[in-house]
Image (cartoon, rainbow, N blue to C red; front, side):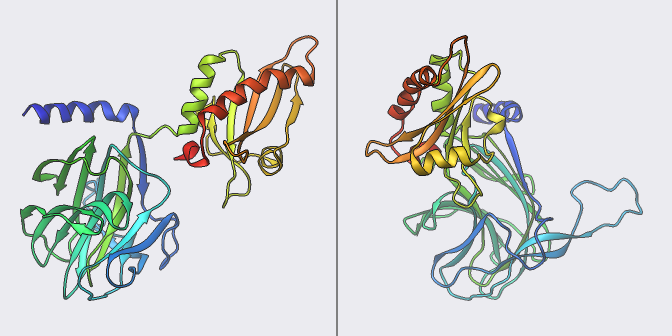
Length: 350
């Protein structure tokens, strides 16, 4: 009873601190895999065939008018491959973020399958062989949780319950620290679990064998993790509170320019920088700029081997007699301090 009360208090506090991400797939063309996801497989066989299709989905809220349609055609995520291989678990992993504490809800429908009819969510995914999974089976009429460690499944935990094929059901997962709650149709059919194997990781859609299953209305409410680079910036700003701005850029890879990963203004994180920041990263040069009330120095950050990891943009208030040489001298100890906190590009962004 005490644990349930503590969990209720956590959920009351959570919305004030939480972020929300919805996967409604409305912007994905028909028969395409949604961007930001990676199709893979645990066990034997080939990865699944994940596509967005149209299907009839009942509204989540009761219609305001009795004349409103009972179901509407909506884009849903479908796993369509029917590979009957045993020990075959198709996964569609969302690659753009990792999650620690979160509440995830999704609707699922098991459509067909001869060997299996299963649908589930894999979470706190480390890789294809290490994660938790919560799944439902309409052939076995079971609702089960288990973990996969180095490709080996633990003993499943769960309940026997009627779960019809061809019908939409709701599945929910709530994670707080090492506590995991598993709900089906709003009912907590599995006692709260405690496990320390995986503290955070990616989430993904999961099926088994030849199951054809659909997913819709997926939402995750989570506590955002502060990027390591942002922690470095905030701690540096405490030591230099008079700085007007401090930003760290890393190479954007797939983007059209360097990506801002940390800033005095957190709302800017994720923006794409310009040629100055890219040139600093590419050639380890230093840029100086002057505006009416400020000076801007953009310098490279190096690892211990002298390789350039990032560009730091230091914005300082100007003063009468300010020179470029003086501005560089002011910025240098700040950048050196940041360098001392960073060992690799990975330590900045992961």
